[in-house]
Length: 247
Image (cartoon, rainbow, N blue to C red; front, side):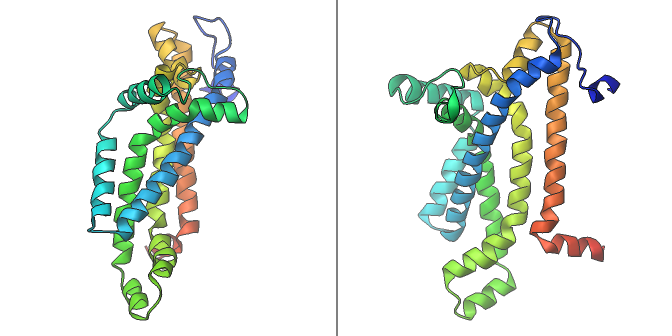
């Protein structure tokens, strides 16, 4: 642990290079994949949850809940194989290996891996969003605003969605923090040279220093992101700070 504070993570048994250099060379690709997947599951997941909450108890709500339930039940490696087969092999719309070069090339190459990584998270976020908005919509001030003739669009935007942001952002942060570990399967399936594939290779070749360093990085990243979420939450929802003062 003392060596880690000086960024000395040891030397790889397999490559003979410094572990820190191996991680640094691959970290950017993994962060790009996680960032892309985060954008996908936040935009699509929150959007689907809002749509289900606004159209609650209708066929739209049932369709969103059914689709997200199916998506949540599909493992990431199965989703990866299905996406490769359909969009990569049959339709040929996206490449199935590598991470690409440049912004457009990287975006093109990482679309299928990011979608595979975000699929389960998308389902979870949509359900959390739907439930949080349903709870916020049942509040007394929302009923009062509706009785006062405030337009429904304004009620949803200013009163329902705003009050539901706390649990939504918390869950998004937790899911994003856990995505570093999720890259192990996706990077291996799509042949991406990132942290996840480096961990798989290290385990297969018994390269203990590399495996230890990658796992330490994943845990540290999770702690950092969840801590940041805890710090940001009271800024977004003053009620949290008020409850803490009251307690």
